[in-house]
Image 1 (tube, rainbow, N blue to C red):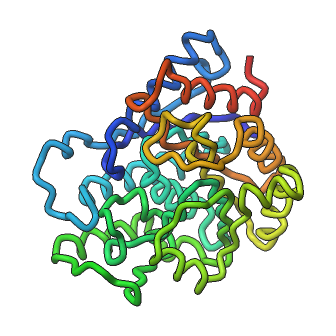
Image 2: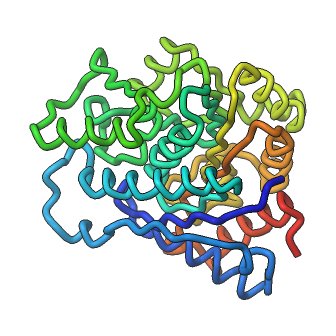
Length: 312
C-alpha cells in the first residue's frame, strides 16, 4: 500500500447529536494511551470546520448549517486531492458523516473523468437531499450531494432561497458534477432507512449487501462481491461509519442500530477491500466520545486500524 497520510476532519455541523467532532481527538488520545507509534508518527493534516456555527442562528433548517458545510467541503476537497496528487493514501478520520461528500469531491478532482466507485459501509443510506430529509441533518445527504440528485419526486420540504443557493454550491464543490453514478455505489450493512430513501434506492437499483447476507456467504466473499460489482470503476473509495457495527461495539456513536457487524467482521471486511489496488481512500466517521463509556468506540476503531495496517 502507498504511504498513508491521515486527514482529520473534526466536524459536528451535519449531525443531530453533538460530539462526533471530538472523535478525531479521542482516537488520537487512544493512540497515545496505547503507545501506538505507527498512528502517532503518520503524517497528518487537520481540516477545520467552524463548529461555532452551532451556537448561531441557522438560516437553513432543511439542511442545518449548510453554508459552513460548504466551506469545509471545499477545504476537505483540496486536502484530499492534494494528498492523492502526492501519491499518498488518504486515511480520513472524520466527525459526522456529512464529511464524505467533501472526500468524494476531492477524489474526483484528482481522478478527473475516470469512474469512482463507492463502497458505503453504514447502517444508513445517507442519500437524502434538503427536499426529502425529515431531520435537516446533512450527515444524511452526502450521497445525494455526490450524485447531484435532489429526488424532488419524494419532496416533503420547500427550500428557502439560501438553502437552494448553498445546496447547489455543495453539489458543485470540486467543479465536477455529478461526482459518481448510481451504478457505482454498493451499500454494505445498511439496515435503517426512511421511506424517501427506500424509494430512490430501489429506483436507482443500488445493491445492499446486508449483514446477514455477508455472514451467509462469508465476510471475505462479500467484500470480494462488492469489489466485483465495481470492477468497471477506475478507483474506489470506502466510507466506513462505525454505526455499521453492532451497538455492542458502537454505543459511542450518534445513531447506533442493532444487528450490525462485529469488530472482527468489520476488520476482515475492510482488510479484504483494501487488498484491491483500486481502493484509493478510506474514511472512518461518527466516533462520538460524548455518548461513549471509557472511550470504547475509539479503542475499537484503533483496534480495527491496527488490524488493517499492521500497526504496532
